[in-house]
Length: 112
Image 1 (cartoon, one colour):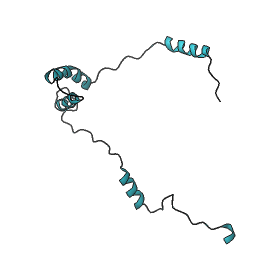
Image 2 (cartoon, one colour):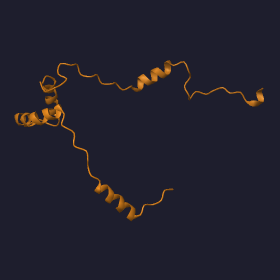
Image 3 (tube, one colour):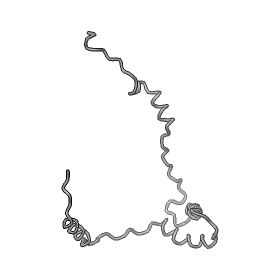
Image 4 (cartoon, helix red, strand yellow):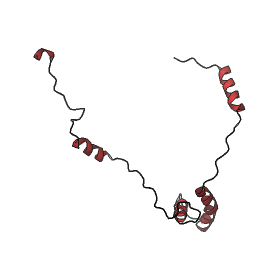
């Protein structure tokens, strides 16, 4: 069982963590982020009654043909389909080996 940390240890670790300089610079915004920042407010003003993420769907449609989009004109990447339970069961049933839960015939040592 690990030792319990004392309050001095916790305070020392906290002090060290706070003193570490942050050398990382924030990432530059992506073209998509810049596009959203520029067009979101205008779309929301034009559609004040829009609910939820309707604005995001509309911006995504605009983004496909936008000159700011570096992937304009390319086909979108296909999403991987997850295996459904029926596919898994069908594949297991088609396999040549019996399932692990089936009883296995074993000979007793006295049968020899």
